[in-house]
Length: 201
Ligand code: ZN
Image 1 (cartoon, rainbow, N blue to C red):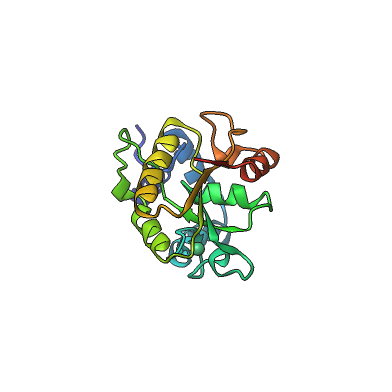
Image 2: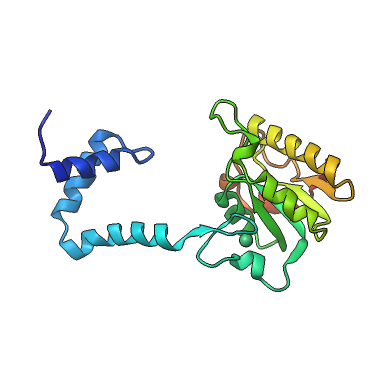
């Protein structure tokens, strides 16, 4: 194995830790950055710094945002009595892209997954219960992915809500979404149908 200088080796190691980037790609990207002029290469460093200093989770819905509460939580005309529960900010973006949904969201930041050691306490379930305790929310739409883990998470939350807030209506996205699929990759028309055709749980 070739010995690079420490700083090149560090860069390659950091790149190789990114999802989908092996050591071979890390090496290629590192040498690409070395060839670029400094201002060009520093754009990547600046973009990483910006995203880590400016972006945080909304204290209400846990969406990613530069302002708190986020644009969706603070948007006038949004129905705050309707909350769609999703796994990740990417799912929220996919549903938003339909332009059809005018309610609020709650991002769980994951799903219950024994394999990935994700337990209910690792998700934003308790903050969701606190939102429900405010009494403003009349309907919760389960928008978790139609996978085994997504369904399990929805059932778990449904049980909690039914026990603590029996007056809240529980619905889930219609099953136009193929089983095992991901909301973030579904096309807009299917998502729009899934929202408008949502069913009682
Ligand atoms: Zn928010």
